[in-house]
Image (cartoon, rainbow, N blue to C red):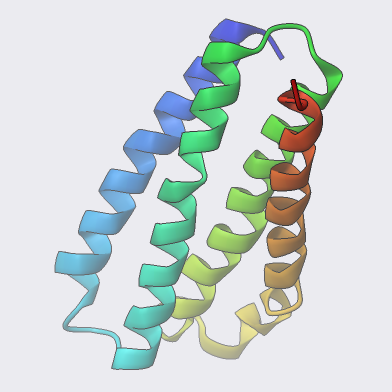
Amino acid sequence: MTYRSKITVISILGAAAVVIGAFGAHGLKPHLDAGALETYKTASFYHFSHLMPMLMIALSVQDSKYANWAFNAFLAGILFFSGSLYLLSVRVLIGGDVWNFLGPITPIGGLFFIIGWLMLLKVFPKG
């Protein structure tokens, strides 16, 4: 992925994190129970916090396969982990149990986050 495309992805995901977080805090609060709101907040936290290492990679490293792997792992983590939690937390509003299949996808997203962090060991080696 090119520098420009990484910055574009980060910018879009960052704007989405703010919009989704605000929607959860203001629009969903009256419609979800405390557990669903907490799940939504967890999704929002992981979504936003994993944009920081993605930005660090985009701004500091060029042409590294490990940097690309880390960046893509964080991206997959946001999509699978946060995305599945967003949908699971609002499932009572969008169709109930039909979304339960997303439950096993959440830990896959978490695994992608872990892989992304471990790839940083190769991106920024000791020295």
